[in-house]
Length: 440
Image (cartoon, rainbow, N blue to C red; front, top):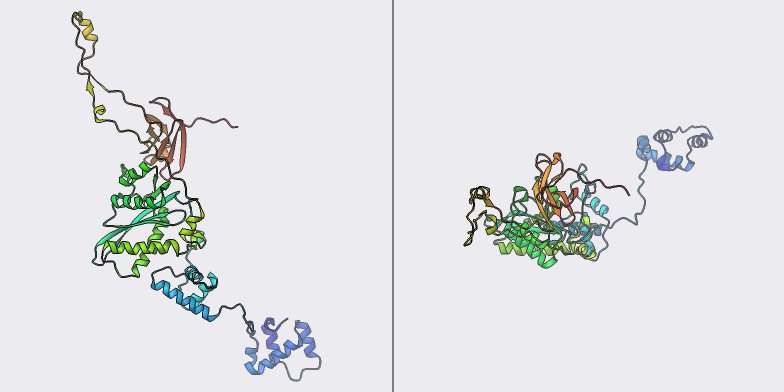
């Protein structure tokens, strides 16, 4: 047994060892307690210096030399880098400091070493009750341009004028594809922000937003300018559930990073000044700031690592019915030809009255299309002039129906598939349940 592992009661007995102990008592004591004579006499010599009680405490286990210990100069430089990041309004955690030192050509300590150094220096606040981010289940689209997110937040200029900053971000790479400062959160500004991003980065497959009037008011019973613009390009507009901002969590977190950046700088005097500042931030965010969710890559590096999704193909929109065909036209009785016989009373009684009105035949539904509508109380929705059963449990909820030449598919507003029916061959049909498919 080595010096530091000798029990306290054994140390106490050695420290109070009698001077007149008989010959051979030390050897028998060491053999009984499985310690060496050198350890015995080492504790015996220590007792007069620190006292019997001090001799019962084990000595320091710290090694004489620590060749792998981080040098103080490296820790001091890391603290200086952290202070600079805080001054610039940037994220200043261990990962951000590690990335900054790496880009400076240094060999920084590990993230854990930096975290311990910052805690020892009193620069970080431990949060043991905070759930680690790794505990969150994240959904990420597999490639750039599969889905974008758009959101806006208000900001104040130097004179107190309130403006809105619209941010568009790619879901896969977290690339800031577009940021626009406008007078307010409006549909016009949203279209301008998305259009500018599309001109630079291409057309995405989907665009996720909240249910605000400026972005996607479909749940309120109408589409809006942005939704119409997206549908014309073939983009599928989707929304999160009401009062559930975590669905757009990537963009919400993006707001915090930009706000910290802006708070570290003097307030902008004009919209143009603020736009220049956010453009500078986007350049830093896309090409310099490493992202924890991207395994330490920047958004630009994550974008370049995977080929973007192909641009969507716009679906044919249902043609608008001309106003001339929307009204009912009276039936004009034919003028009898010269020499024709006069109609009898029975013929006149059988003929339709002149005031009867008939509808002009209209074209059938388009080959492909989609519509968003609410489920009725009986669990049905009406698509293509036919009734389709969804579920009574979804009464009052919005669903999205998509049809082509063969099928009619019904999804929730979050994209969850509910049911697929064969496309009806005529109007007026009712489908109670999907047709049974025989097992293969």
